[in-house]
Image (cartoon, rainbow, N blue to C red; front, side):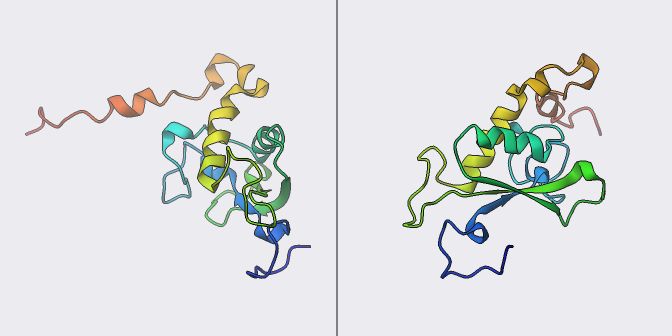
Length: 145
C-alpha cells in the first residue's frame, strides 16, 4: 500500500521511488502530451512490460502499478501501467553509479527497448520509423513567397 510522500521516509520506501510512465518515452507524443526526453532517446509506443524487462536486467528494484497516466486520452489497457524504480540507498547514495538520476534511467530505457527480442521480430511494416525523417523535414522556407 502506497501512502503519501514525506521527506521523513527512507529511500527504500516505495513512495520515494521514481515513477516512469510509458508516455515519457513515447516518440509519438509531444512534450505537451507528456514526453519527457528528446525524440532521439524515445521509442515508438513503449509498454510498461518492455520498460520493466529492461530495468530488471539492470539489477535495480522495480515495481509495476496499474495506474493510468493523467494526460493519456485513451483508457485502453495497452496504455496502463506505471513503473516505480528505486534509485538511491537509504543513505542517499545511488544504488548503481550508472543511474544517478531519473533522466539517466529513462535514456537507458530508450536505448535498450529497440534491442529487445520482441522489438527485433516485428514484421517490416510494423517497424517504427527512424528519427532521421524528422531532421529532413526542417528545410528552409526559401521557395515560399
